[in-house]
Length: 279
Image (cartoon, rainbow, N blue to C red):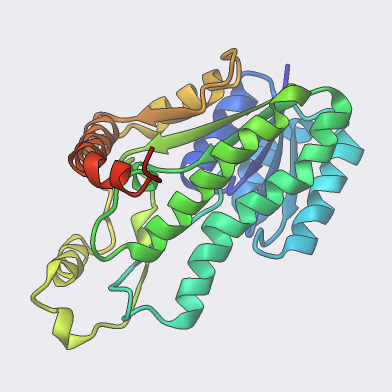
């Protein structure tokens, strides 16, 4: 039996991971804004499930919850950082509060969670930190600039810090799902429209959202149960895989984007070399 700390545990992939862990006999410290959504699991699994209500963007509150988890449960084998949301709109359509919320929730909160748990993981001799990213951490689409900014940012942090904590036996894995059939679309915020963007790709995204009535991922290829199972299994992989693409759409889209960047880099090789001092 292992012990997991899961943020964003009340819905989507976080909920699915929590359920699968409990079913196999593991202990879960589940953190969510609305812990009442976990009441059914608490009733069924009793002391296997430890819950705490917290806004992960409140750094002091997040640190307090982390300290409580380790104080009350002792060792935590895996930390699954899953809380997050999406936002749609052209960059200039986004209100300041929406920009700040995306960065705070999708980038700053995972960074602060990692900083809060690392001392505990070091003290216990190691552990695993799994971060939910997305294929949107390697690709980008018009109309989701702030979402991509937050995900690209957290991927940069995780890739860098992985080398910092590896000597302490702490492994880091970034999960990069494609579209998964969860309620993610229903929780997405949409910026007020500027008419100038109506006939642009951003306008097309708005039309699609309206046509799907918020059910953005209703026909997504990704199976949340299978995604959750791979996330759980990844904790036993040694060494920890730095990134795991989940979904045929994620694999194809990221491969195309990465290859495109490599092509551009190669095309501009002579320009790059031309800026060195003459030998």
